[in-house]
Image 1 (cartoon, helix red, strand yellow):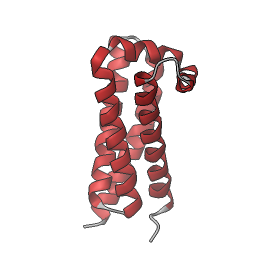
Image 2 (cartoon, one colour):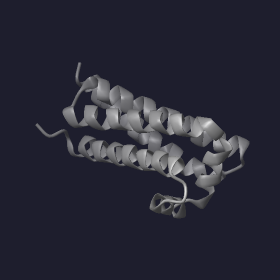
Image 3 (tube, one colour):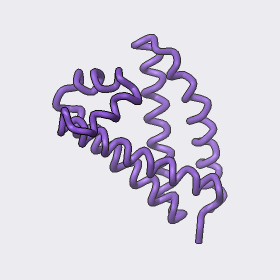
Length: 130
Protein backbone atom coordinates (compact mmCIF):
# COMPACT_ATOMS: atom_id res chain seq x y z
CA UNK A 1 0.00 0.00 0.00
CA UNK A 2 1.35 3.40 -1.00
CA UNK A 3 1.49 6.10 1.71
CA UNK A 4 -0.54 9.35 1.48
CA UNK A 5 0.74 11.75 -1.24
CA UNK A 6 2.69 14.11 1.04
CA UNK A 7 4.22 11.22 2.99
CA UNK A 8 5.13 9.59 -0.34
CA UNK A 9 6.78 12.85 -1.47
CA UNK A 10 8.65 13.10 1.83
CA UNK A 11 9.94 9.55 1.42
CA UNK A 12 11.33 10.54 -1.99
CA UNK A 13 12.79 13.71 -0.46
CA UNK A 14 14.59 11.76 2.26
CA UNK A 15 15.74 9.20 -0.32
CA UNK A 16 17.27 12.02 -2.36
CA UNK A 17 18.89 13.38 0.80
CA UNK A 18 20.44 9.98 1.50
CA UNK A 19 21.86 9.81 -2.05
CA UNK A 20 23.23 13.35 -1.90
CA UNK A 21 24.86 12.72 1.49
CA UNK A 22 26.36 9.45 0.21
CA UNK A 23 27.68 11.25 -2.88
CA UNK A 24 29.22 13.86 -0.57
CA UNK A 25 30.99 11.08 1.35
CA UNK A 26 32.34 9.62 -1.88
CA UNK A 27 33.47 13.05 -3.12
CA UNK A 28 35.29 13.70 0.15
CA UNK A 29 36.99 10.30 0.02
CA UNK A 30 37.91 10.59 -3.67
CA UNK A 31 39.10 14.19 -4.23
CA UNK A 32 39.84 15.08 -7.81
CA UNK A 33 37.36 12.53 -9.14
CA UNK A 34 34.34 13.33 -11.33
CA UNK A 35 32.32 13.40 -8.09
CA UNK A 36 33.86 16.81 -7.38
CA UNK A 37 31.11 18.17 -9.64
CA UNK A 38 28.84 18.05 -6.60
CA UNK A 39 30.68 21.04 -5.15
CA UNK A 40 29.43 23.20 -8.02
CA UNK A 41 25.98 23.02 -6.40
CA UNK A 42 27.28 24.83 -3.31
CA UNK A 43 30.98 25.72 -3.56
CA UNK A 44 31.18 26.88 0.09
CA UNK A 45 30.13 23.38 1.22
CA UNK A 46 33.43 21.87 0.10
CA UNK A 47 35.52 24.17 2.29
CA UNK A 48 33.00 23.79 5.13
CA UNK A 49 33.39 20.00 5.02
CA UNK A 50 37.17 20.26 4.77
CA UNK A 51 37.18 22.49 7.87
CA UNK A 52 35.53 19.63 9.81
CA UNK A 53 38.57 17.45 9.08
CA UNK A 54 38.21 13.76 9.86
CA UNK A 55 34.72 14.35 11.30
CA UNK A 56 33.20 15.21 7.89
CA UNK A 57 32.96 11.69 6.48
CA UNK A 58 31.46 9.98 9.56
CA UNK A 59 29.03 12.88 9.98
CA UNK A 60 27.78 12.56 6.41
CA UNK A 61 27.55 8.78 6.73
CA UNK A 62 25.24 9.32 9.72
CA UNK A 63 23.20 11.90 7.76
CA UNK A 64 22.89 9.51 4.82
CA UNK A 65 21.88 6.60 7.05
CA UNK A 66 19.21 8.57 8.91
CA UNK A 67 17.80 10.00 5.68
CA UNK A 68 17.65 6.47 4.24
CA UNK A 69 15.93 5.18 7.38
CA UNK A 70 13.38 7.99 7.22
CA UNK A 71 12.75 7.32 3.52
CA UNK A 72 12.19 3.60 4.02
CA UNK A 73 10.10 4.07 7.16
CA UNK A 74 7.88 6.70 5.56
CA UNK A 75 7.49 4.59 2.42
CA UNK A 76 6.35 1.64 4.53
CA UNK A 77 4.06 3.80 6.63
CA UNK A 78 5.92 2.75 9.77
CA UNK A 79 5.55 4.85 12.91
CA UNK A 80 9.32 4.62 13.51
CA UNK A 81 9.93 6.09 10.04
CA UNK A 82 7.78 9.08 10.87
CA UNK A 83 9.67 9.56 14.13
CA UNK A 84 13.05 9.35 12.37
CA UNK A 85 11.86 11.90 9.80
CA UNK A 86 10.72 14.24 12.59
CA UNK A 87 14.11 13.87 14.29
CA UNK A 88 16.03 14.59 11.06
CA UNK A 89 13.92 17.66 10.30
CA UNK A 90 14.29 18.93 13.87
CA UNK A 91 18.09 18.51 13.85
CA UNK A 92 18.20 20.29 10.48
CA UNK A 93 16.11 23.18 11.85
CA UNK A 94 18.45 23.48 14.84
CA UNK A 95 21.40 23.55 12.43
CA UNK A 96 19.75 26.25 10.32
CA UNK A 97 19.14 28.32 13.43
CA UNK A 98 22.75 27.86 14.56
CA UNK A 99 24.02 28.93 11.12
CA UNK A 100 21.90 32.06 11.29
CA UNK A 101 23.00 32.97 14.81
CA UNK A 102 26.66 31.93 14.75
CA UNK A 103 27.63 32.49 11.13
CA UNK A 104 25.17 35.29 10.41
CA UNK A 105 23.92 33.34 7.40
CA UNK A 106 20.31 34.45 7.61
CA UNK A 107 19.39 32.71 4.35
CA UNK A 108 19.26 29.46 6.32
CA UNK A 109 16.21 30.77 8.19
CA UNK A 110 14.07 30.10 5.09
CA UNK A 111 14.20 26.43 6.05
CA UNK A 112 12.59 26.97 9.46
CA UNK A 113 8.97 27.44 8.35
CA UNK A 114 9.36 24.59 5.86
CA UNK A 115 10.78 22.22 8.49
CA UNK A 116 8.18 23.40 11.00
CA UNK A 117 5.34 22.71 8.59
CA UNK A 118 6.67 19.26 7.75
CA UNK A 119 7.19 18.37 11.41
CA UNK A 120 3.64 19.57 12.15
CA UNK A 121 2.29 17.36 9.36
CA UNK A 122 4.28 14.33 10.53
CA UNK A 123 3.29 14.79 14.18
CA UNK A 124 -0.35 14.86 13.07
CA UNK A 125 0.26 11.64 11.12
CA UNK A 126 1.67 9.93 14.23
CA UNK A 127 -1.24 11.10 16.37
CA UNK A 128 -3.82 9.98 13.80
CA UNK A 129 -2.37 6.45 13.89
CA UNK A 130 -3.32 5.99 17.55
